[in-house]
Image (spheres, rainbow, N blue to C red):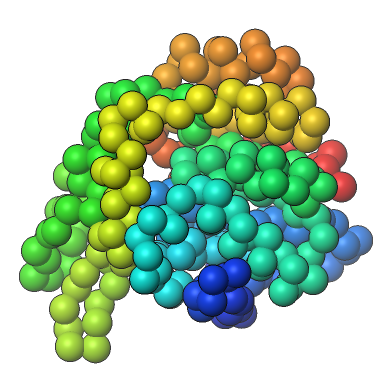
Length: 293
Protein backbone atom coordinates (compact mmCIF):
# COMPACT_ATOMS: atom_id res chain seq x y z
CA UNK A 1 0.00 0.00 0.00
CA UNK A 2 1.22 3.49 -0.88
CA UNK A 3 0.32 6.29 1.48
CA UNK A 4 0.61 9.89 0.35
CA UNK A 5 0.57 12.55 3.04
CA UNK A 6 0.83 16.28 2.67
CA UNK A 7 3.69 18.08 4.30
CA UNK A 8 4.38 21.70 5.14
CA UNK A 9 7.52 23.29 3.78
CA UNK A 10 9.56 24.40 6.78
CA UNK A 11 12.52 26.75 6.68
CA UNK A 12 15.10 27.34 9.38
CA UNK A 13 18.38 29.19 9.76
CA UNK A 14 21.70 27.50 10.32
CA UNK A 15 24.09 28.99 12.91
CA UNK A 16 26.06 30.56 10.03
CA UNK A 17 22.98 32.02 8.34
CA UNK A 18 22.03 29.52 5.64
CA UNK A 19 18.36 29.08 4.76
CA UNK A 20 17.63 25.37 5.21
CA UNK A 21 14.61 23.28 4.23
CA UNK A 22 12.62 20.39 5.66
CA UNK A 23 9.43 18.55 4.81
CA UNK A 24 7.27 18.76 7.94
CA UNK A 25 4.67 15.99 8.23
CA UNK A 26 2.02 16.50 10.92
CA UNK A 27 1.36 13.57 13.26
CA UNK A 28 -1.79 11.50 12.99
CA UNK A 29 -4.34 11.35 15.81
CA UNK A 30 -3.48 9.87 19.18
CA UNK A 31 -1.18 10.53 22.08
CA UNK A 32 1.69 12.86 21.18
CA UNK A 33 5.02 11.05 20.93
CA UNK A 34 8.57 12.32 20.34
CA UNK A 35 8.95 13.51 16.74
CA UNK A 36 11.26 12.04 14.14
CA UNK A 37 14.01 13.87 12.28
CA UNK A 38 15.03 11.98 9.14
CA UNK A 39 18.42 12.71 7.59
CA UNK A 40 19.44 11.48 4.14
CA UNK A 41 22.74 10.30 2.68
CA UNK A 42 25.65 12.17 1.10
CA UNK A 43 24.24 13.10 -2.32
CA UNK A 44 20.53 12.75 -1.56
CA UNK A 45 17.74 14.84 -0.05
CA UNK A 46 14.45 14.71 1.87
CA UNK A 47 12.64 13.08 -1.05
CA UNK A 48 14.26 9.79 -0.04
CA UNK A 49 11.78 9.62 2.86
CA UNK A 50 8.75 10.34 0.70
CA UNK A 51 7.47 6.78 1.05
CA UNK A 52 8.33 6.16 4.72
CA UNK A 53 7.54 9.53 6.30
CA UNK A 54 3.74 9.41 5.76
CA UNK A 55 3.51 6.03 7.52
CA UNK A 56 5.60 7.28 10.43
CA UNK A 57 3.43 10.40 10.70
CA UNK A 58 0.23 8.35 10.58
CA UNK A 59 1.50 6.39 13.58
CA UNK A 60 1.31 9.55 15.67
CA UNK A 61 4.72 11.12 15.28
CA UNK A 62 5.58 14.40 13.64
CA UNK A 63 8.25 13.81 10.99
CA UNK A 64 10.74 16.35 9.70
CA UNK A 65 12.66 15.08 6.68
CA UNK A 66 15.50 17.51 6.08
CA UNK A 67 17.54 18.72 3.15
CA UNK A 68 21.05 18.95 4.60
CA UNK A 69 22.90 22.12 3.59
CA UNK A 70 23.99 21.97 -0.05
CA UNK A 71 21.21 19.56 -1.01
CA UNK A 72 17.70 19.92 -2.39
CA UNK A 73 15.97 23.16 -1.39
CA UNK A 74 18.52 24.11 1.26
CA UNK A 75 21.09 26.82 0.56
CA UNK A 76 24.50 25.91 -0.71
CA UNK A 77 27.36 26.90 1.54
CA UNK A 78 29.76 29.64 0.46
CA UNK A 79 32.50 27.77 2.33
CA UNK A 80 32.57 24.14 1.15
CA UNK A 81 34.65 23.15 4.18
CA UNK A 82 31.44 23.44 6.21
CA UNK A 83 30.16 20.31 4.48
CA UNK A 84 31.09 18.17 7.50
CA UNK A 85 29.08 15.98 9.91
CA UNK A 86 29.84 18.17 12.93
CA UNK A 87 28.50 21.25 11.13
CA UNK A 88 25.48 19.32 9.87
CA UNK A 89 24.79 18.20 13.44
CA UNK A 90 24.77 21.82 14.64
CA UNK A 91 22.32 22.60 11.83
CA UNK A 92 20.01 19.88 13.20
CA UNK A 93 20.21 21.38 16.69
CA UNK A 94 19.27 24.76 15.18
CA UNK A 95 16.24 23.12 13.55
CA UNK A 96 15.18 21.65 16.87
CA UNK A 97 15.57 24.96 18.63
CA UNK A 98 13.60 26.91 16.02
CA UNK A 99 10.88 24.24 15.77
CA UNK A 100 10.58 24.06 19.58
CA UNK A 101 11.64 20.40 19.68
CA UNK A 102 13.49 19.34 22.83
CA UNK A 103 14.04 15.67 21.99
CA UNK A 104 13.63 13.60 18.82
CA UNK A 105 14.12 10.19 17.32
CA UNK A 106 16.70 10.33 14.55
CA UNK A 107 16.56 8.25 11.37
CA UNK A 108 19.88 8.55 9.58
CA UNK A 109 20.70 7.00 6.21
CA UNK A 110 24.45 6.65 5.58
CA UNK A 111 25.78 10.19 6.16
CA UNK A 112 22.61 10.86 8.15
CA UNK A 113 23.71 8.19 10.60
CA UNK A 114 27.12 9.84 10.98
CA UNK A 115 25.35 13.12 11.70
CA UNK A 116 23.22 11.34 14.30
CA UNK A 117 26.32 10.01 16.05
CA UNK A 118 27.94 13.46 15.98
CA UNK A 119 24.77 15.05 17.33
CA UNK A 120 24.64 12.57 20.20
CA UNK A 121 28.15 13.62 21.18
CA UNK A 122 27.23 17.32 21.01
CA UNK A 123 23.92 17.15 22.89
CA UNK A 124 22.99 13.68 24.17
CA UNK A 125 19.69 14.80 25.64
CA UNK A 126 18.41 15.81 22.19
CA UNK A 127 18.40 12.20 20.99
CA UNK A 128 15.61 9.93 22.21
CA UNK A 129 16.57 7.00 19.98
CA UNK A 130 18.35 6.35 16.70
CA UNK A 131 17.80 4.30 13.57
CA UNK A 132 21.06 3.89 11.66
CA UNK A 133 20.43 2.94 8.04
CA UNK A 134 23.36 1.02 6.53
CA UNK A 135 26.07 2.94 8.33
CA UNK A 136 28.40 2.30 11.22
CA UNK A 137 31.42 3.71 13.04
CA UNK A 138 33.61 2.33 10.28
CA UNK A 139 32.85 1.55 6.66
CA UNK A 140 34.13 -0.81 4.01
CA UNK A 141 36.71 0.74 1.65
CA UNK A 142 35.08 -0.72 -1.47
CA UNK A 143 31.81 1.03 -0.80
CA UNK A 144 33.55 4.30 0.01
CA UNK A 145 35.52 4.12 -3.22
CA UNK A 146 32.35 3.52 -5.23
CA UNK A 147 30.59 6.52 -3.68
CA UNK A 148 33.66 8.75 -4.01
CA UNK A 149 33.91 7.83 -7.71
CA UNK A 150 30.71 9.72 -8.56
CA UNK A 151 30.17 12.22 -5.73
CA UNK A 152 30.66 15.77 -6.95
CA UNK A 153 31.54 14.65 -10.46
CA UNK A 154 29.94 16.56 -13.38
CA UNK A 155 27.33 14.73 -15.42
CA UNK A 156 25.59 15.80 -18.63
CA UNK A 157 21.89 15.02 -18.69
CA UNK A 158 19.73 15.87 -21.67
CA UNK A 159 16.48 14.20 -20.69
CA UNK A 160 14.73 12.35 -17.88
CA UNK A 161 15.63 9.13 -19.69
CA UNK A 162 19.29 10.12 -19.36
CA UNK A 163 18.73 10.88 -15.68
CA UNK A 164 17.15 7.46 -15.10
CA UNK A 165 20.05 5.77 -16.90
CA UNK A 166 22.52 7.63 -14.67
CA UNK A 167 20.61 6.68 -11.53
CA UNK A 168 20.67 3.04 -12.59
CA UNK A 169 24.37 3.16 -13.46
CA UNK A 170 25.48 4.40 -10.04
CA UNK A 171 22.87 2.61 -7.92
CA UNK A 172 22.05 -0.54 -9.86
CA UNK A 173 24.27 -2.62 -7.59
CA UNK A 174 22.09 -1.63 -4.64
CA UNK A 175 18.70 -2.24 -6.26
CA UNK A 176 19.03 -5.05 -8.82
CA UNK A 177 15.28 -5.66 -8.72
CA UNK A 178 14.27 -2.13 -9.80
CA UNK A 179 12.17 -1.69 -12.93
CA UNK A 180 12.47 1.12 -15.49
CA UNK A 181 9.63 2.91 -13.68
CA UNK A 182 11.52 2.60 -10.39
CA UNK A 183 14.61 4.17 -11.92
CA UNK A 184 12.56 7.01 -13.38
CA UNK A 185 11.17 7.69 -9.90
CA UNK A 186 14.66 7.46 -8.42
CA UNK A 187 15.97 9.98 -10.96
CA UNK A 188 13.24 12.46 -10.06
CA UNK A 189 14.39 12.33 -6.43
CA UNK A 190 18.06 13.02 -7.13
CA UNK A 191 17.74 15.44 -10.07
CA UNK A 192 15.94 18.76 -10.34
CA UNK A 193 14.65 20.45 -13.49
CA UNK A 194 15.38 24.16 -13.67
CA UNK A 195 12.98 26.75 -15.14
CA UNK A 196 15.05 26.79 -18.33
CA UNK A 197 14.43 23.06 -18.71
CA UNK A 198 17.94 21.94 -17.77
CA UNK A 199 18.12 18.83 -15.59
CA UNK A 200 20.87 18.69 -12.99
CA UNK A 201 21.85 16.78 -9.87
CA UNK A 202 20.11 18.22 -6.84
CA UNK A 203 23.19 18.92 -4.74
CA UNK A 204 26.23 21.17 -4.62
CA UNK A 205 29.18 19.37 -6.24
CA UNK A 206 31.41 21.04 -3.64
CA UNK A 207 30.10 18.65 -0.95
CA UNK A 208 33.05 16.48 -1.96
CA UNK A 209 35.66 19.19 -1.24
CA UNK A 210 36.24 18.27 2.44
CA UNK A 211 36.53 14.60 1.52
CA UNK A 212 39.19 15.31 -1.08
CA UNK A 213 41.00 17.72 1.26
CA UNK A 214 41.10 15.19 4.09
CA UNK A 215 42.76 12.49 2.01
CA UNK A 216 42.17 8.76 1.80
CA UNK A 217 43.05 7.95 5.40
CA UNK A 218 40.53 10.40 6.78
CA UNK A 219 37.75 8.73 4.77
CA UNK A 220 37.64 6.00 7.41
CA UNK A 221 37.67 7.85 10.75
CA UNK A 222 37.39 6.02 14.06
CA UNK A 223 33.84 6.71 15.22
CA UNK A 224 33.60 3.75 17.59
CA UNK A 225 33.58 5.92 20.73
CA UNK A 226 30.64 7.93 19.33
CA UNK A 227 28.79 4.78 18.32
CA UNK A 228 29.27 3.12 21.70
CA UNK A 229 28.03 6.23 23.45
CA UNK A 230 24.93 6.27 21.26
CA UNK A 231 24.07 2.58 21.28
CA UNK A 232 24.76 2.05 24.98
CA UNK A 233 22.73 5.03 26.16
CA UNK A 234 19.93 5.31 23.58
CA UNK A 235 17.62 2.73 22.00
CA UNK A 236 19.24 2.00 18.64
CA UNK A 237 18.18 0.06 15.55
CA UNK A 238 20.68 -0.88 12.85
CA UNK A 239 19.28 -1.53 9.38
CA UNK A 240 21.65 -3.23 6.94
CA UNK A 241 21.22 -3.90 3.25
CA UNK A 242 21.94 -7.59 2.77
CA UNK A 243 24.17 -6.78 -0.22
CA UNK A 244 25.70 -3.59 1.17
CA UNK A 245 29.23 -2.76 0.06
CA UNK A 246 29.55 0.04 2.64
CA UNK A 247 28.38 -1.64 5.85
CA UNK A 248 29.90 -5.09 5.57
CA UNK A 249 28.53 -8.03 7.52
CA UNK A 250 31.77 -8.12 9.50
CA UNK A 251 31.35 -4.49 10.60
CA UNK A 252 27.70 -5.11 11.51
CA UNK A 253 28.76 -8.08 13.65
CA UNK A 254 31.34 -5.91 15.43
CA UNK A 255 28.62 -3.34 16.11
CA UNK A 256 26.29 -5.98 17.56
CA UNK A 257 29.09 -7.26 19.77
CA UNK A 258 29.88 -3.73 20.99
CA UNK A 259 26.19 -3.00 21.66
CA UNK A 260 24.33 -6.24 22.49
CA UNK A 261 21.08 -4.38 23.22
CA UNK A 262 20.98 -2.84 19.75
CA UNK A 263 18.10 -3.99 17.54
CA UNK A 264 19.09 -5.26 14.10
CA UNK A 265 17.45 -6.06 10.78
CA UNK A 266 18.87 -7.07 7.43
CA UNK A 267 17.02 -6.23 4.22
CA UNK A 268 17.64 -9.04 1.71
CA UNK A 269 18.54 -8.36 -1.91
CA UNK A 270 19.33 -4.68 -1.33
CA UNK A 271 22.69 -2.92 -1.20
CA UNK A 272 23.65 0.51 0.11
CA UNK A 273 21.34 1.81 1.30
CA UNK A 274 17.82 0.45 1.86
CA UNK A 275 15.09 2.99 1.09
CA UNK A 276 13.33 1.92 4.33
CA UNK A 277 10.10 1.26 2.45
CA UNK A 278 11.00 -2.44 2.16
CA UNK A 279 8.69 -4.73 4.13
CA UNK A 280 11.49 -6.01 6.39
CA UNK A 281 12.74 -2.49 7.16
CA UNK A 282 9.29 -1.05 7.83
CA UNK A 283 8.31 -3.91 10.12
CA UNK A 284 11.51 -3.54 12.15
CA UNK A 285 11.16 0.25 12.35
CA UNK A 286 7.57 0.13 13.59
CA UNK A 287 8.37 -2.60 16.11
CA UNK A 288 11.34 -0.55 17.36
CA UNK A 289 9.38 2.70 17.61
CA UNK A 290 6.50 1.06 19.48
CA UNK A 291 8.57 1.19 22.68
CA UNK A 292 10.20 4.57 22.13
CA UNK A 293 8.71 7.52 24.05
